[in-house]
Image (cartoon, rainbow, N blue to C red; front, side, top):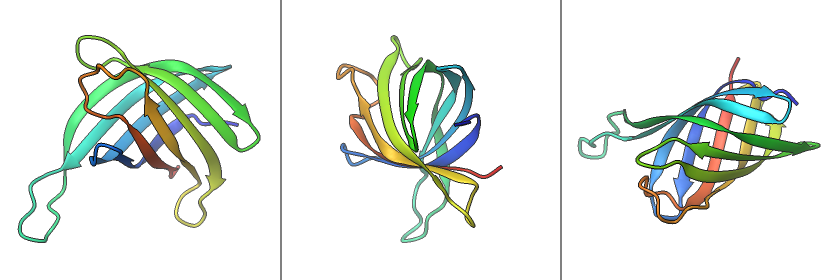
Length: 129
């Protein structure tokens, strides 16, 4: 299973936050590295959505395991004064015609005393190229 590439999508956290996410993944054996960016909605003009504002970009590194179409990523985000541990469990599916592939799953932030304000939730990422 090759997950290397530029993925983008959305997450919805149990704290109520929704965000756009982009990540650039590189995999070698069972190691994963890359960058992770989170964007929040910029101010609304009445009912009109006006776009996304970059909130955070961080390097990530960790491990992954795959069984069939299911995978588990366990990684650290280098955000704030200390790294944040995250576990992402997902299925990889064919997303044709919208994208080549999609990752559909949930994530858990295992360190409750972190600075990013996320607790865990659902995430959908697409690989277009």
